[in-house]
Image (tube, rainbow, N blue to C red; front, side, top):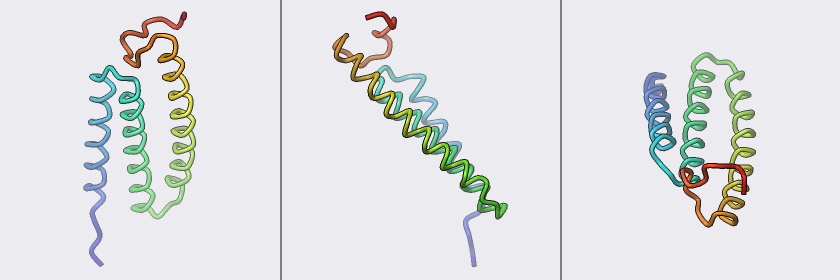
Length: 102
């Protein structure tokens, strides 16, 4: 049976992580920044699952469950912060929210 080599998964993961990093560093919209962070976390998940399947060990898949739980919490807290920011400052741009004092 022909399978996809591990290198292809790692290259895809590196590309996704790079796109996420560029999104975090260049975008001003807080929602897009959070989406870019989620993309980076998913690329790490892909790496863990790829190595887990390649090595025949389930430890990588267990780490993926923990990362998914952290990502869900990050998305929830991040959205709450963005909503609070929008209610107070009427903007979701990161550079305009330069202080935590309302």
